[in-house]
Amino acid sequence: MLLDSLTVVSKWAIPLLLLAIPIYGYIKKVPVYEAFVEGAEEGFKTAVKIIPFLVGMMVAISVFRASGAMDYLIAAIAPLMVALGAPPEVLPMAVMRPLSGSGTLGIATELMRVYGPDSFIGRLASVMQGTTDTTFFVLTVYFGAVGIKKYKYSLYTGLTADIVGLLAAIYICNMIFR
Image (cartoon, rainbow, N blue to C red; front, side, top):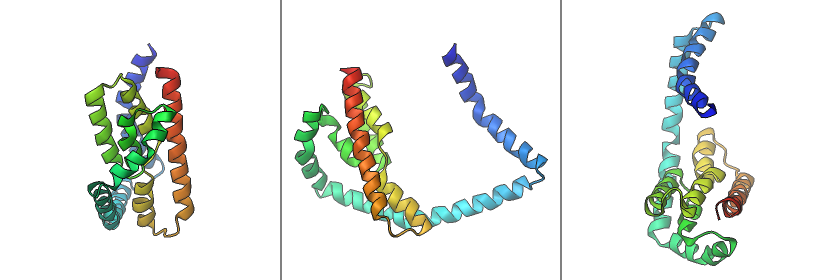
């Protein structure tokens, strides 16, 4: 019953929202179409502005992986992760997650294909995807787009949150799925 209700709500939520916004704007006497065009123009400018930061980050990630540095890092932290209860197969995902969301999603997809979504590895990969963030992507693209250059403490905070999220994912998955 609840799942059926949620399915109906999820199907109608976006169309109703798209209908409610112009109606609300009409009631408030806002020129809705002109405001939409102005917002789209600003969005395009922002997209163009973040391209150099995005390209720089993609090149850095590619160099990190192609140089073999990622393999050395994974080999160095593998014994610690295994001692914590994480299978070594998820380590590339744990290392890649702060760098790239799409790269992590590719690794998670491969883990699901090989081990299955209902395996411990598949479940841990799914929980890790939800408990960590793309810290370097956020700092590079979003902070770069708005011109923030002093982000040392944001980096420390983001990486700390990623480590805590990773440890929580390992702990929770071991408690629930093993």
